[in-house]
Amino acid sequence: MRLDDVTWTALREVALREGITPQQLFARIDSRRPADLSFTVAVRQYLLQYFRAAATEDGHAEAGHGMITVPRSMLYAKVGSWPILMIGVGHHHIR
Image (cartoon, rainbow, N blue to C red; front, side, top):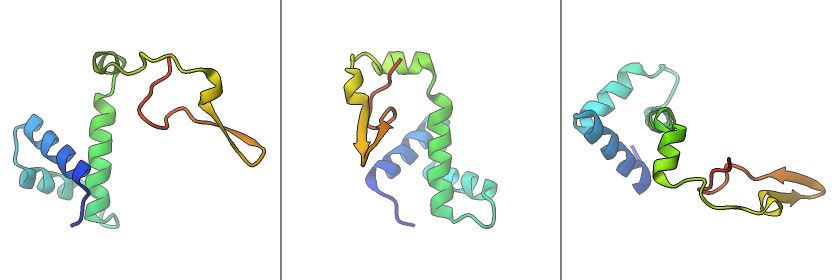
């Protein structure tokens, strides 16, 4: 299985937090994945869901997210003649 460094780091962090080895976490993910889903995709989805479940408003505040005032004009990009809302791009959280 090929994973980028950030994904490996997240995987080790989750295993440590859960008190299990990375191999045990792999077994947990594998036992819950649908048969038509590749193992690599299942690992990435598990990690995304794990951290999304932990991403509460209190957690964002503790991490310092959303503390930067961003001018409204910076929230949009033009693609052709269409303005595209850019919230969620990068590491900012607008409240």
